[in-house]
Image 1 (cartoon, rainbow, N blue to C red):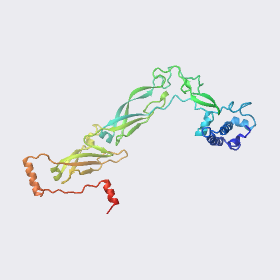
Image 2 (image 1 turned 135 degrees about the horizontal axis):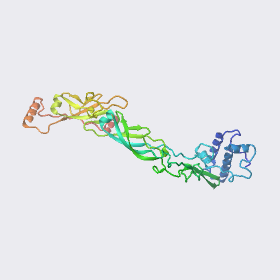
Image 3 (image 1 turned 120 degrees about the vertical axis):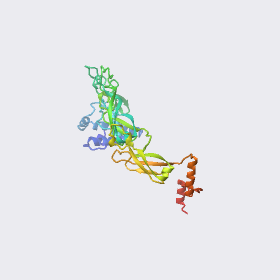
Image 4 (image 1 turned 90 degrees about the horizontal axis):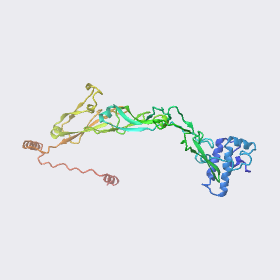
Length: 390
């Protein structure tokens, strides 16, 4: 090549490695055969690639600056160049590392996967917290080889195929010259070593499946879908690597009395029409009544509360009792919303019917006309009125 290599890349002679790489990356994007198939452009790409190969290698660059042949006598492009495919990938994708360097052997010891189990709890348990013992089936450290994966008295040996590198080079000739790619060694699966005598207990994996019991503390205020994380209680990694995390996903069982909406509790109370008209006081159970015996003494639990129903209470009305709902994970407590349903008697004996007719006569309701009210407008009707006020 008669043209100066620095001029080919468009850099100064004192340019550093990063500047040279950026210049080559820019030119390679313009001249690569996949982008520009013109024969002259392909030849230009070869020259630029050769210039980068020389100037990115400190030894070849030093030889070139001294006026020598960086490839040795008679070596030309396509014969002694042998630039790696990694260099081209560097140019297009910005990969790091020096040209031609591989990743090396991958470690046998790797972090284990996270595990997930689902736990159903009662509403009161989710509200006030509980401690549970769980049986989990996960991978644990092999007690025979302690994660080494080898039989007693043996150790892994270097792979003869890749000589411990974990990778083997594959060379292909093309119009770009010799393209060298690194692939994981098939003999050792990229580990760089081989276990001649695997542990019989774990078959060389360094871990075995085992069922164990864990104690998990469910905090007060959790809801369905909440996940409690137990760090390091998941699957032990291959080769005895560190364990992943265990996540306990909470699901709350339906309750006979209460339904939960966020931190609020809702329940429905059915009253006869006489109690709704005259008013009354009802004794209702609290959620604390469901707390498992032993979590607190009876004196600490308020298992019932009195609900005052005011005279004239209408069916569908709600009463809100502040602070009687579910405790929040970050403090505070929700409300208890009591929905009142007034029940109309379906069957009356003669005496009851006589008394009701007498009450209707006293109230002037013997021939009620009823109150006719306009039905609520639909969404489209409200929109029509908004745009056509007249």
